[in-house]
Amino acid sequence: MGETNLAGVKVMVIDDSNTIRRSAEIFLKQSGCEVILAEDGFDALSKIASELPNVIFVDIMMPRLDGYQTCSLIKKNPRFKSIPVIMLSSKDGLFDRARGRMVGSDQYLTKPFTQESLLEAVNTYASASNTSATE
Image 1 (cartoon, rainbow, N blue to C red):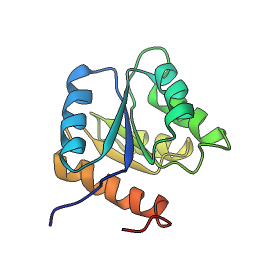
Image 2: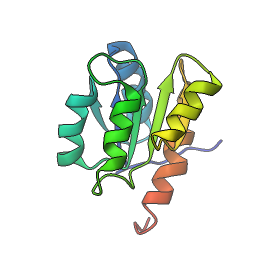
Image 3: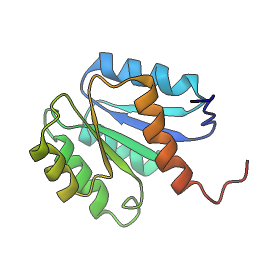
């Protein structure tokens, strides 16, 4: 895998774990992404409106508003529904994947993720949503 240049791609990471947010931020910033961090769904929803990220990673297990509810709210909003949402979970269960699809998530990533799997996911969706941008 060559150097991935994701400069200018806005990625939001929604996770209540500071460790996960930090490691995702480091991985993403190393390849030029602009990173927006949110601690939970409520925090994220206000930031999505102002930042309009290209890709959103959302943890499933969070207090107040879990990942499924957050994803569902994003996908129900006409302004945000085209933004790819990737679920993050420490469980790699079929049920979780299916439930993630039901609320409209685009992909499912198991934690702990590697820098490679994270960037691969961003690459897949950022290029799809950024086709109008010229390099």
